[in-house]
Image (cartoon, rainbow, N blue to C red; front, side):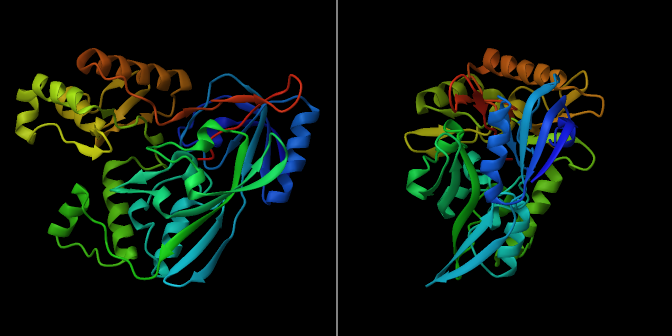
Length: 361
């Protein structure tokens, strides 16, 4: 366990904004978590848990608490008939695990290649991309319960997974230390998503997990800014999920604008439809590249919010609010942020001590 003081949150988050944190405690083994929490408890501090910080908007004000930086590493592979159970530490980089599994010829993670963040964040957010969601391959999640000081293991069905959601978002006392995935030795490509269909028509090899992963990374590189050059958290907003009636009314309202594109795209979900927010921002509202001050929507993918070098958290928040207001005024749709504020939930460990835990991305 390593302890630092006065660390800039802009160094710990991919948006590269935010004030400083009073303490940063780097956790390299799960046995260090009780010790770190004891340090927090003794000082009556709040705390947040971070991994790569790629799904986080930190406030400009100093954070008078402790950041638990999760660096629990390692991965193991266990044969289970036609499957392999892959267990990875919560601090492992997500895309590194995807590549490692692809090199072993294991199927299940390839469509999720290129997503920034850590393994511990994957179930919290129920990450998804290119027609896949991580919950379909999660076998179990190991976590430390900061509320009662116990270790717990949750099977997939106990995790409360839904679109970009899980019980771990709503029970922040659960600090994820490891995730086990059930991957297939012999799988089939799932390349029905539009970008992958286009890649196949261009002659791209999509026959192996590695080939699919590299194609997905290529698509992402073309759509998303380079984290080495820009401050960004990737897709800032969730895609809206609407009733069929609301979708039909929206389609009728924008019939002329949407007609050249074959109408407003939709993806069926149980009892409702999901629509791509990028289409609304770009094709219907012409907001591609929209800028306010030091923050703007990325030209190649309007769902991505980018912060200039001089940007503050306030700049990012002002732009996000402006987009939310514009969409609601134009379409009646209230959109939700995928990116989370640094502190999004508090609970009492004992007495009046408020302890907060953060999404590990």
